[in-house]
Length: 452
Image (cartoon, rainbow, N blue to C red; front, side, top):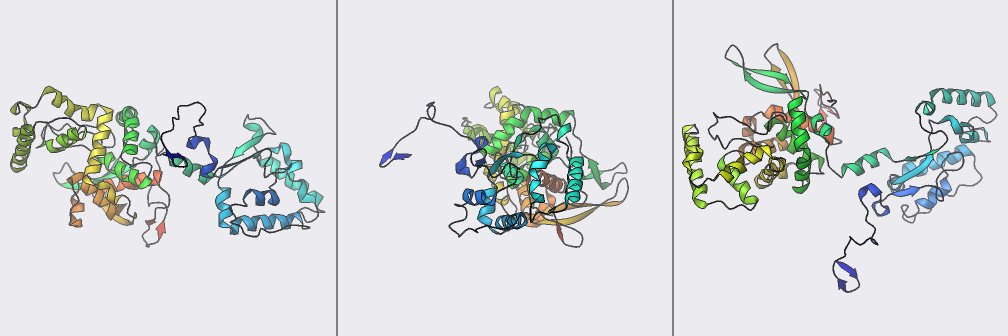
C-alpha cells in the first residue's frame, strides 16, 4: 500500500501504537458521530437546539445557506427544526449517524425541567397552568423508568434504530436461533397416502432435538463458509442459499441422505447442499487440493453412467475400486460428519454451479395456491419466484435448465419456495408479496413468524 508520497510497503498492524477499529467501535469515518458533553445537541432540559444542530451538520448541508432563527417563539423554533430535518436529505443522512447522550423521555425525574419551556410565551401551555399540570400528571402515569431497576436521572446512549440494525446486519453472522427461526411453520409435500395415491399435504415443520443439535454443531462453520464464498452478508444470497439448504437437509435435521436404495449409493447426499454422485465428491476433493488418481476418476465416471442407465447402485460398491483408499472413504464420510466439510462442500458446489448469479436478481414474488387433498380439502397460499426457481433447479440438477418449465420438476420445489419466503422474512427488508387482488404487501398471506 502507499503509506507516504512515492513510498509503498506494508504496515505491521500488530504494533501497539496503531489503533485498530472494528464496526463495533462506530468509527467517525463510517459516518458515526458521538453527541455528548462538549458537543451535545441537548440543553439542560433535554431539548434539541437548532443552532447547535446546524453547526454539527454543516458539512452535510453541502454549503447551503442555513436558516437563521432569531426572536421567535419556542413553537416556531420547534417547527423550523422539524422542517429543517424533514426536508433536507443530507441532514437526515447525517442524523442517522448520531449517537446521542441524553435523558430518557420515560424517566420522570426531569419532567419539570424538560418541559418547562411549554409554559413560555409561544409555548403550548402558555397561560394554561392547569393544562400543563394535567399534562405532567398524565405523562408521569405512562412513564415506567422507576420499575426498570435502572438508575434514575441519568443519560442514555441513543442510536437511530434503523441505522443501528443495518450497521450490524453488515456482519451477516447468524446465531443458532436466527438460523432455526427461518424454518417455515409448515411446508407443502406431494406424498403417497394409505390409499396408494399421491396427495398434496401441508405438514408441520418442527424445531426439535435433531435440528437444534445439528445447527449447534455446525453453525460456526456454516457462517464462515457463507462469508468465504461471498454469500454473506447479502440477505438475498443468504436467503437463497438457506432456502435450499433447509429442504436438502430435511429442515436442518440430516446432513447425510443415508439412502442405501439410491442409485448413487454410497455416493449419496452429504452436507448442507447434499453433495451427490462421485464426480461431485472428486471435484470437491480437488478443490481442497487433494490428489485423486485419474484411473479412479474414470472408473467412477463409467459406473455413474451405468447406474443411471440401470437405475441401481450395484456398480458403486467400494470394493470394485482398488484405487479407492480408506482415507478417501473417510473423506466422503467427513462431508457429513465434520462441520467444516459439511459447510465447505456446499459452498464449493454453490460456487461451481453458478447458482448465486440468480440470487442478485429482483425478488419478483408471485402468489400461488395449492389445494390440499389430504386429510381435508383446503387451499394453501405460497409464493413462487422465477429467479429463486432457477437457483433451486441449479442446486437440484447441477446446472440451470434452459427450459424454465423444468423448474416445476425440482425435488420439493414448493417447499423450497416456502423456505425461501420464510428466510426472506427474517433476513431482508422490502420484499413485496402480492395479495389475491394483485396489490403488494410486505407480509405473505398466512405467514407466521417462528419464535425459537
